[in-house]
Amino acid sequence: MEFSSKLLEDAVNEVSQLPGIGKRTALRLVLHLLRQPASQTHDLATSLVRLKDTIKYCKDCHSISDAEQCDICANPSRDGEVICVVEDIRDVMAIESTAQFKGRYHVLGGKISPIEGVGPQDLTIEALIERLKSGSIKELIFAMSSTMEGDTTNFYIYRQLEGMDIKTSTIARGIAVGDELEYADEVTLGRSILNRIPFENSMKTQ
Image (cartoon, rainbow, N blue to C red):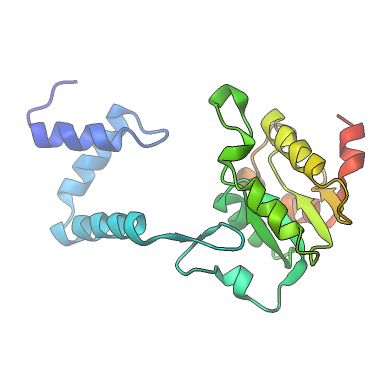
């Protein structure tokens, strides 16, 4: 792809590094921004810089937050005895959209994947175990995607709970094997949360 401007080429190269964005799509987006009022492009750039420089992670659940503690963890009406373990904030948003879950979350920041070089030490698993050691948690819900990596992550955490009096469950398989939670419709995901099953039973069906 030949460019008539080095500035244009640099912008396209940067945008094309985003997931799912090729060079042609990046060019279309950059040209679109050029046609917009300068204030709109500046606002976009400013919001991205502010996001990167000032975003925080909740001290309790490790979800993305504007403050030291996220709104969900700070909400006294949420059930602090139930924790739902998810991969990232997209899963929190997906489950929250169902309005069926009233507990709290723990965001792992990924899932165990030896192929991609991601091990337990790269996730917030240790912080989760520390939360569970407090003795105030009664149930842990595994809500990872139904993939090999998700199942591996669930099982690893489950093994760390030996000796703890904590009920473990997993969302019902209304979510097809291999599907990501963020793409599930709200009704299906909501039913999967409400109809969760003991984690031990899920291992017997695999």
